[in-house]
Image 1 (cartoon, rainbow, N blue to C red):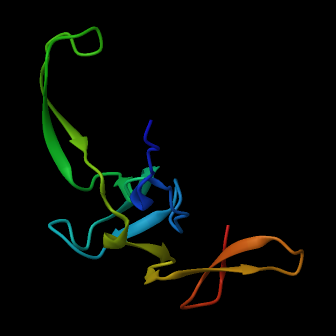
Image 2 (image 1 turned 180 degrees about the vertical axis):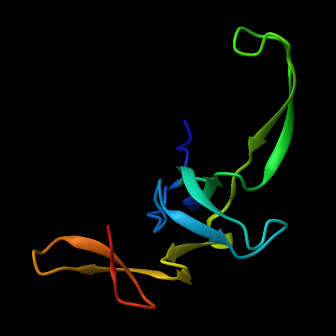
Length: 115
């Protein structure tokens, strides 16, 4: 009986972007678009951003959509293609321990602690 070995890519990575963050797309077709993060997919290192990377999905009639047809939905984009907005400026994110000994995120450009 052979042992199965996990790939390194299967291990979820701690990401600095979280659900609810306001981000700007910095690369790709939707470059310059801004929106709120709806969902974070850590295993795939992707995020779903509101109003960005819209695709058309063809669906069969169901209880939710009795007509069926074409529905526009947001598709995931890679986390490296988005940057957190603090105020109006895109910034990188760091982590540090605050005076209470708690690990917090902060904006590297301004030094401001992010909720």
